[in-house]
Amino acid sequence: MASPILDKTTTDYLNTIFGSEAAWVNDKELGPLILQISKDGLTDLTRIKDYLQTHAVDANGQIQTVAPDKSWFGTKGSAVRNAIVLQKSDPATYKENVDYTLKNSVIPTATRLGITLDPTVLQTIAENIYNNGWGSSQNLIENAITSQFHYDPKAAATLASTGKSAGGAVSKTASSFASIASDYGVTLPKDPTQLDAFIKGAIGVNGTEDAFRDWAKQQAIHAYPFLADAINAGSTVKGYLGNYATNIANTLDLPTDAIDWSQPKWQSLVNPVGSTKLPNLNEVLTTVKNDPQYGYDQTMGAKNSAYDLAAKIKQVFGKGA
Image (cartoon, rainbow, N blue to C red; front, side):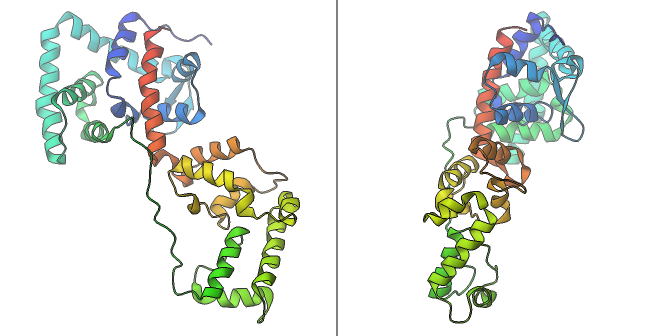
């Protein structure tokens, strides 16, 4: 199916309104599309343009494949043309309308939220709100202001490690057993008072750390049969999957120690049901980015990538259809 032709007026207008990337990333109709493109790693301008012209966000916030005239471009084309026509044919009225939006919607909302922004930024927000008809939605006005306040495309995605808590008084010996379990991806009771009984049940009342390590190895081989050779050769689950843990942690803005292979949430990434081999790292990271349980959308990395993409989309419009 051929892509719709965007006239020069529309593309020129779209080129101007992408000055406030944060507002666009948080727009309920366009933001999810930008974020999904970022997740999919699309960088080719033609493919980006094709995606935006053939997808739309439904009332439930889900992305759907649609006909070009039902896409974001197809449904917004008329609105953006009307705005730019007014801007060029009657600039005085256009400026009056934007100023009204600035004084009666943007500034009062920013003041109520306790947010201070540069006047030129507030002006850009007012233009975005007016041009796209957001004035009737207080929620969209607040999103445009707060997202621009927090927007920093050069911010480093860094988080301080908070460490790990034992969750209670654990003896030195029990703590050693817990470390061994973590190395081999063995899940232990969350309640420290149950830990002693668990260990005794696994290796007996007089079991040693070496005995527990041997038991943990067998559990790991049973859970990860495709790692049997590596484990028998002296590796641990944690050690063998260290590169996976590092990449997952970096993607999610987490300390590496937060990736605990004894937890089902992380196990399922590298050892899905029915797996006979370790999944490709790219497959794992794709799952991390797209499965809501991992919270990728809330990371600084995801937001910065989306902001950068929003800026790049200007090139799509600038090159025409």
